[in-house]
Amino acid sequence: MARRLRRLRRPHGTTELAAAGLVALAAAVLLFQAAEACARVVARYWPVLAGFAVVAFVGVTVGWVRRRDEARARVQRLAALRISMPGIDALGDQDFEFALRDLLVRDGWNARKVGQQGDQAADVIGQHPALGRIVLQAKHTKVGSQVMYQVKGTAGPVHGADIAVVVTNGSFTRDAKAWGDKHAVQWVDRDRLRLWAEHGVALHDLLRLPARVVKPGVGRSAA
Image 1: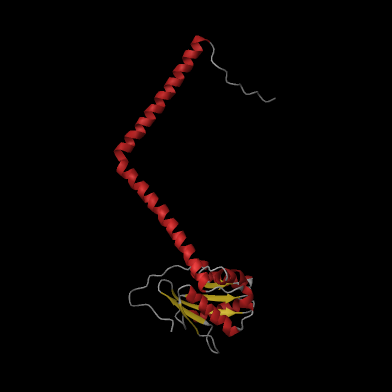
Image 2: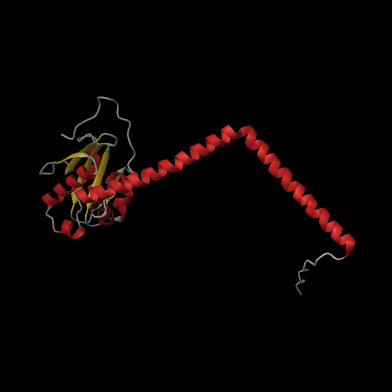
């Protein structure tokens, strides 16, 4: 049988009252000493503490400003260009490639459409001052591993690309996704394309592309 918890009772009698008073006094003295010690630490190290406070304030402010600027940039991108998925589905192959080019331009890339017969798995090529050179291969069908092999084989060696991406308004097979993740071929399926085209998420944010250190005078054009 569980024991009943004992309830605290009020002190009775002079002795108990005196003991309770001493305990309360001791607690008050300890609190006062702790507060006094904190005050001494603050008085001694206030420049360091103030510095930490300033750094924390600046960090919070910078984060807030960055989020605000990103939100504004997203609104501006949407105002510049927004393509619905039904609109993309209605495009032919050539117009789909032009649409992808326009989305890259919206996101700050210098891009051009190059897709034609013998394009060697490149429909759109773009250049970004911080992200490097990108090659997009556009597909209107379900994408298998063979497409990923082709893009990997030509993106860097033929087109000098830093980033290879396959884009479809359909889907990718599980093997194609796994192979692309392993061999650095980015993939944009229907869900990701919706975020890019309809919701204004920049492609480099969507794919979490890392910024590259570009030496002065070494940048390449999209031509």
